[in-house]
Length: 296
Image 1: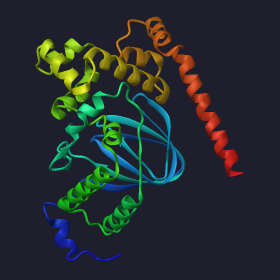
Image 2: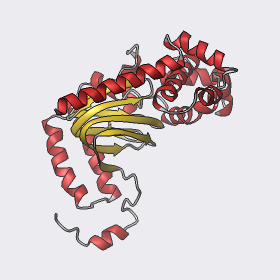
Image 3: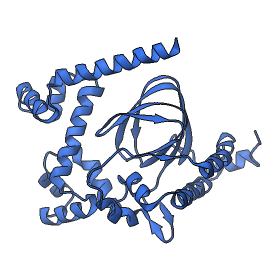
Image 4: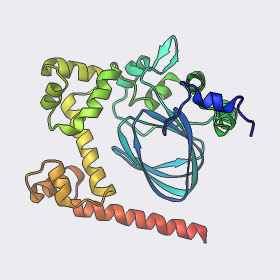
């Protein structure tokens, strides 16, 4: 490993990234279950290893070496790692652009054409491999200058734009491709503390008419429909991926009784909370058994 010159002076610079979550970092995890809180829109490159990932409305999606995925801000993620995994993480600023003439917001119209959100990944192509191979040694050397990491992130976006179609980029960046990033982030930060679209509009300081108009322009759907989808995804996550009692979950989501909670799950998930949790546990058990067989 080459030594930074001068190493001490570089680390004392005010632009040196000293945070626990730098703009770009490498994460390595062994086999097993891992949970992660995403505090910024983030691109994850799976360099080696693989397994399953669950977040928001997506459950047990397969990831493997060579995949690139985007995790939106304020997301709780659970990994089921089959083998040791290495991930290159890029934390994205709200102002990130492909270039001076093509922003993420330019993808909004393309996103509008898509009828349903899907779990979308890109692939690490040969050009990205070269980019990664030049970046990793610098990170290993401890080169964490904020400007350097920002430039490398810009370089990544240039490469993504050059070697992917606009339609593919629109699908991949769908969670970020909004008409108003500040409004989007505010909605995501506040929606869990309210029950209705009217409450959310009031909390964010909008008239309901103005809020609904801006919401539709930003998210592509009506606020009530989006809130219901997010709340269902959050409820499903609490049932499947936590050890909270059903009474705790029922109270957390404001159900009047356990009977109301169970009836709601039956109507929306097709089964009771107990059956939903048991089915998920059985699926996890089968996966572990398959992993053991593959090792024999």
